[in-house]
Length: 118
Image 1 (tube, rainbow, N blue to C red):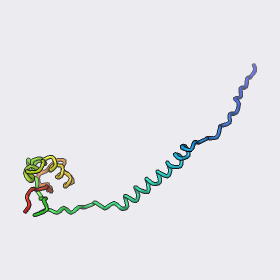
Image 2: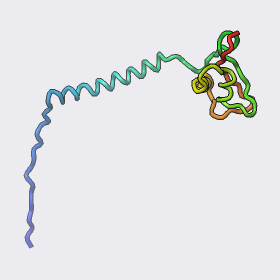
Image 3: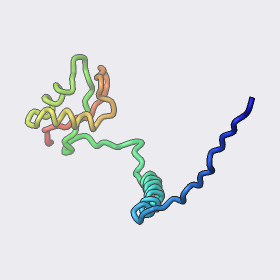
Image 4: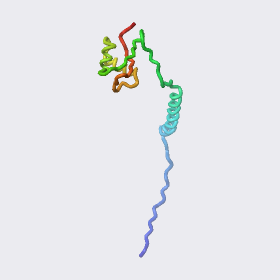
C-alpha cells in the first residue's frame, strides 16, 4: 500500500486594516467604559445616605401619623384624611411616605397627607 500525503499550503493571515471610523470606535469604547465606571463610583460616593428619614408630622405640615385598625385600606385612609384631593394621588403619596404599604396590619403606623391645616 502506498501512503498519500496531502499538505495544505500555508496561509498567511493578512494584517487587520481599520478604517478611520474603526480606529475611533476601538479607542472610544474603552474610554467610554472608564468614564462610566468613574461616574458610578463618584455618584455612589457623593450620594446622600438614606438609611433613616425624619418625617415631620403635626399641625401645619399637612401630614398626620395614623395607626391602622382592622378594615383600613390605603384608599379609605386617603379619602378620610384628604377628601378634597385626588384619591389616587393621595394613595401614591402615602406609599411614598411609608416604607411598607403592601399589606396593612392593625397597629401599623402610617404617615398620611391631610387636608387639615391647624
